[in-house]
Length: 426
Image (cartoon, rainbow, N blue to C red; front, side, top):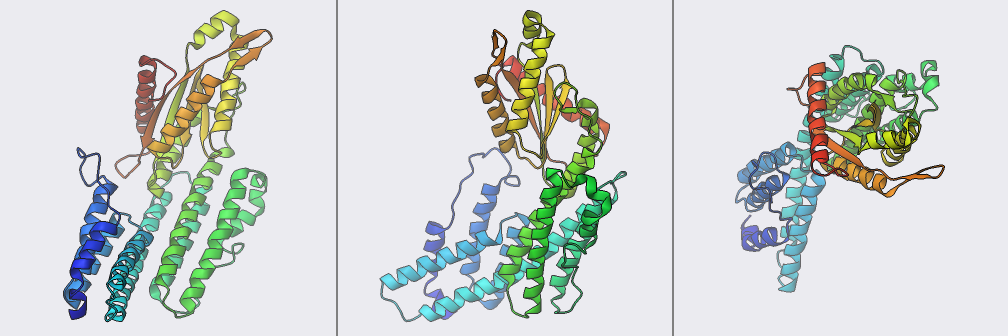
């Protein structure tokens, strides 16, 4: 410690000058909601750790820093890269000054910090990951009509078993089934009851995700069996496994509705009568995954004029034309409904506000750039779009009343787009 104290001022300078430094442009919001504020606070805690003057202080400040990063969803790779950046800058400064005497001690000092941070981060990360999956499991178990989600329930149990195996830190055989065809979820996928789903793109996506997930899990088990310390590798692998798991849940939720999907005879889009049912399911899924979803309500501008001028047959062609724009622009995981007349509703799973606005503006721009040609008639039209992002936490119940409130809110945004001149997104 005596050697390191000599370099405290340089360490402080490196942290201040070379760590990621961001400032919030949304000062009116509470720091509880902003990631930029979390990074600012993280930097203070990071510096306090590196300037710790005793082993006891190091232990305490390591716990504080790691707990904060976990709570604020700051990734391990971010934390690791910040540490590496400081080390490189500090060593570079020392070498420039030809101060080679204490390089080994400095390397040991930062290596010990890296080891302590990584070990503690893994432990806290696994605790949080287990808690998240137990919460997802409880939400699925409370669903009145699970359908395919009962198989995702088995999948979540498998994930929890894998986490517990790592936490036990024992090189035994009590790990979950690694063969993707033999776990409960894999047996369902290979069962005769799923044969009618094999041609769907969503089922193929699930199959690929599931294979990758088991491949990663086999690596996790091999690392644990090797009795070697690879916490950074385990953090990376489990992060990826969690990502694949969430994607599988999203695809399963889509399959839940495919077998009951009724299509609008004109546009071949989903009908409004399915919207409420799918919305209720999406609220439950959002609570399980902790990810937001979004709504878009689209209304063709001055569509009555098209019908009155050219007739309903031409109006129907325009509706079909716009339906094709939606199908070609949106993602396979998005739900597109003909909501009534010239109104369309789009439900976008696991989509942020920013992503929703980008997609909506893309639809708006493409629509305005296209034209419909019917015999000798050329028609150009535009669309107005209202958007809404929904983060379903435990305060939101999956009820018809909740669905109606969301529809009212997105309809208000659509009305605002109309009021502000049409051919725009709100």
